[in-house]
Image: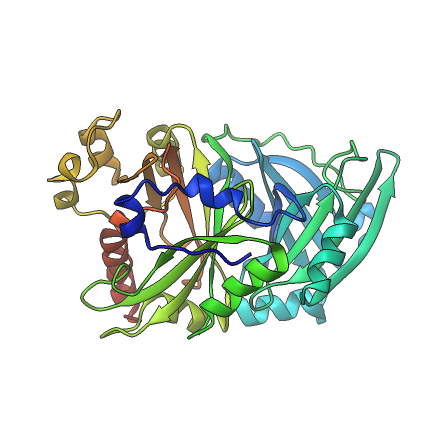
Length: 387
């Protein structure tokens, strides 16, 4: 459904509510939330250890040689409502090897929880989606799951998961992953949004895809003058389903004096793909503190960012000195405010990072923080020689 949108500066000066926009999406699927995110990685066992240690994920399920799989192995990690699946190939050749060779470790699947996976497939393919997986019934002694899937930007895939008739661990074909090593969670709650980077002049095409094919509404639009520094710029639009549980910002490069973070991503990823996963927490200070203790590196925010913070965002519940200590960014919209912080790239290629976000009413995405954030990213690019 096409609706009129405004950039965030306009939204901040009106009574226009993002909650109103959510209701205007055609939620014909409908989506109940993010079911899991699957990454294809070179070594799933070691990657699982990293995500458990650094981010506090717990062992949930496993599939591999011991469960009858001959071509791949998958470790499933869980923290609150978040599931990560880490999959590696067990032999040469094949699609997983090819994906890793082209993209490095990367998000392949953003799986969406639905009431009816067959209907979701039929509705989206009828509207023009490229099929990835026809509706497939998978079952074991714990019941059955139906999954289907479509392609989105690049080689990224959406799998629709219908699990109302299943009470086993994760999916049929997986067994419970017993491990004595399960570090304490760090307070991560659920996937807030997943950001995709696409090529030059492709953003509108993929926004129209989410609008036409999946019934999403565009809730925010950022032009290059909203998201720019002295050297680089990008453009972004945010698409959301009707209940607001699934939000996909889409970025594209914009002209600047130097190479932007989006251009760097596209060069190293070799095409469009998932740039970062934003994960919600109820206490960003505690979460970030625990992650730092476990070795997670975050982007540096200059102390001068906090000099006029309260003048920019108004009263907040948190101690500014504590936020300053951890480099946490703050922004406000007409619904409230949010706190956010971004890790440095967590992979060898500069292609993926994690955002930690705490929303205190705000429905937006921190436009007031973009300049400070992108200057921090530029400092990292300069170290890599890719700015």
